Length: 134
Ligand SMILES: [Zn+2]
Image (cartoon, rainbow, N blue to C red; front, top):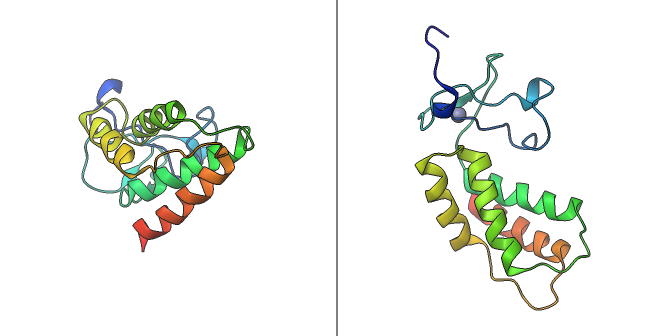
């Protein structure tokens, strides 16, 4: 790093599958490139990971989260909306890209059906993610 980027302007994306929890361990270290960068993400240890297919990654991330936390609880529309916002910020940090991602997620996440459990909803998300990745 030849120049220091203020924290607010960092990308801050975490490696898929390692997004949650404190930044302990090399795989949890967030991207240190400037927010909105074009190339692969890169952390302070020089690890890189692709910025491509963020939508599929976000869907799988949400599916895992729903399965992990109270999978038999009823899925709700409020939870769907809240998670779209949370995921978008986890992927992009507090940037305009996060706002676009939230819109994209809300457009992609299917409506919640009555008495659908979080686990059932997660299964649908995984199917959609496969379609997105192809
Ligand atoms: Zn990045």
